[in-house]
View 1: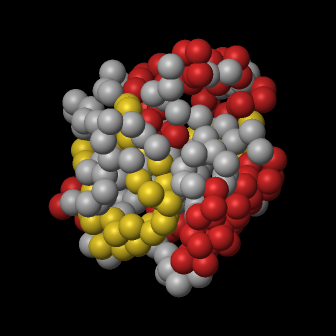
View 2 (view 1 turned 90 degrees about the horizontal axis):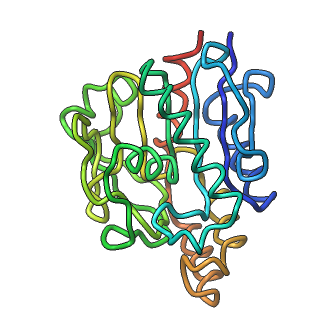
Length: 244
């Protein structure tokens, strides 16, 4: 089996390592079936798509909509690298799953506005609703029409890119899962997060502007009462569909 390429942008080691372990856990991948690159540190080296089964791009505290002077040199570099990678992904309709930042990056590449103007989401669990197209999509077929997922975002795409299928929505943000061409997917919510993961992120990102720092302990306590089980199945189906 060819490995999956996992691209990460989280500069804090604790959050990055936990995200990577969650990607492995819920996808069913073993460490030797994944090639991990922390592009916030290394950028994206020259790669051959044919060496991989698919690509997963995770989330992090970077924002597409921040002004150039607000972005450090590492973010500017990986944003440029992603543009070149997306050129190839779209040319070959290569299997891709963007999560959180991955959703913003792919819609920005398609020329759609990503901003903090509307659809920011508070940290917590929200209800996702599949569209008719979502209910019939290979990655989502037989999933419940409505399920809970974890989110927490400062920005979102403001419109659906042209020639894009909307597979899921929510009251907080109308664009929760999209599909472009046949094999390119992106989710606004986190397919890798479980209760342990969301509690860790609340702790490590308490000073990153997602919420007031003094609210962190309350949010962690609130997460204890949440129940999220279905998003990880999307990650597993993506891997099972495209492993080769």
